[in-house]
Length: 321
Image 1 (tube, rainbow, N blue to C red):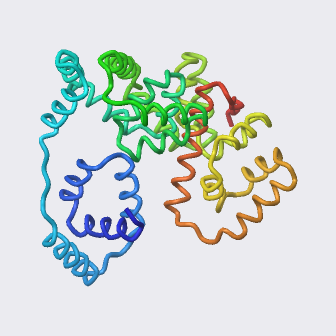
Image 2 (image 1 turned 135 degrees about the vertical axis):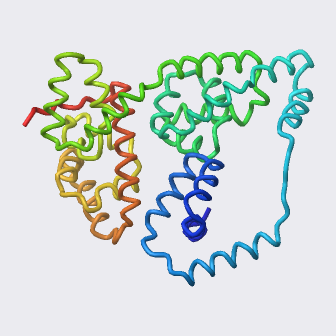
Image 3 (image 1 turned 45 degrees about the horizontal axis):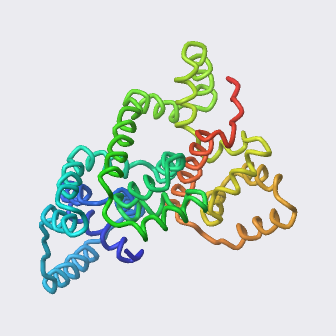
């Protein structure tokens, strides 16, 4: 959807109220919810005349459109029966179960960087099977974060593959089941959220104390709270690794408006020419919406967590204040 279309949709949901917005959100994918939510947050005041204009536009568009409905289970059954022998088609249909669908939906709500980190150790066939069943926007965002060779293997597998074989679906079921068992406990998520709201000194002191009791739990909480400012805690090698794994636009937007410490830390490991080019690009970037800066910071945090989980970088421990 274009930016103008996203803004119109955001204004429409604000005009319709919380209940209607909640009903719409339930029908959207994770990336769409994120983009639409950011657009809604960016609208501070919605004049009454603007509401009338939006409603008139949507009513006119709706009057020109017709509905479309599909029996997806019948469609899938027909497609499988055309592609596979009857016994294989029946087995494949049985394996595309409600639990598998629900697990894939939960996977799709994870950050793209986290999904990419989960996919990277897998075989090309399994990655293709998983990516092929994710929403297209989520799949594309995760693919962009995979190593180039694995990304090419996955795209080749998707282009050349047909309906997943029963063996591939069985492997997919097994992987999803293991992923579901490894899901982070809600209590850990709550603890990580509270730590993120504390001052840096209090958070470091709490984690250091917790580390004496449960080092693994403390390490998991530290990883969940990695963010943009943690770039200054990377070693020289870690900063170079990070720069190789982050998009140029994301980095520029994340650096916009920062206090300069992260910029200095990153340019210190660049060549003089690259460092000056980065500073020049920042100077000429112009104003960036706060929502885009916040999105870039979130992407940096996701990249840091993925690289740390892979062992590609290490974060220096903070000392308590």
